[in-house]
Amino acid sequence: MATSKASSALIEAPWRAAFLSHVQQLDPPTFVLCTLGAQNSGVRGRTVIFRGMWAGLPVHPKNTARLNPEIYRTHLPTLTTDARMEKTPELMANDSGNAQSGGGNPVEAVFWMPEVQTQWRLRGRGYLIGPDIDTDAGASVRAALTPHMRRIAESSSESWSWSKELTAHFGNLGPLMRGSFRNPPPGSPLHEDQPPPEPLGLGQKVDNLDDDVARSNFRVVVIVPEEVDKLDLSDPQRGRRWNYKDCGGSWKETELWP
Image 1: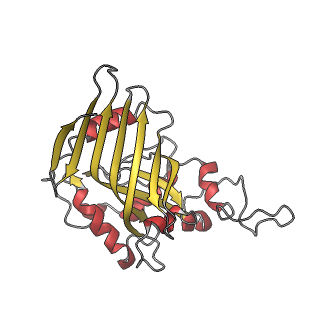
Image 2: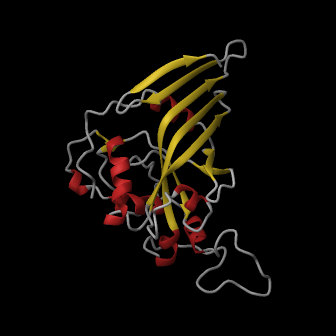
């Protein structure tokens, strides 16, 4: 259930429209997500896929999940991940325990848009949304994200569900991609003479959106940007750069030397 503090009075982030127009030109919409190693092992980076803004999923025509009403708009980029991957403990706060939802650790997302010769860097905090998001265990994540969810429609927020949004993200993936969440644990040693225990295995297709194994490993990562940097190199004779800082409900825009 959505938290009651989402507001229609929130100001739309001034960089949001340009950012989305640029992302729509990426095929596929990949970016580099950087985190800090869980054991002080330095910065970790990997290429991931942008899955739309939180609460504004670009729904695939074959997605059979029940969808939330379109009552919120955010500037919070999302991606999907496997809970068993190394980025999970890198995102989770130290006191998260066995929670499936959590996070709040620093992240940086770097997008290069070749069609418009523009780089976007989003620095902020990353949060994981898992099967327990609607329980007390997910309260801290709901509290962190809700203030950034701007009301754009008058439908009751009681009809909007965090778990439903999580399932919609799972349904937006193809059956083979859903099946990847039934793979053996990513990064674990491979032994040719020792197949993974059932039901784990490569190349599986999952049609059931409530598949217990796949859903237990599936997570949505939501990035809460605190600072955004836009570098426009489309004019080789005059590059331009802007910085946007979240000042608690409003954004400070500053043009910088590139």
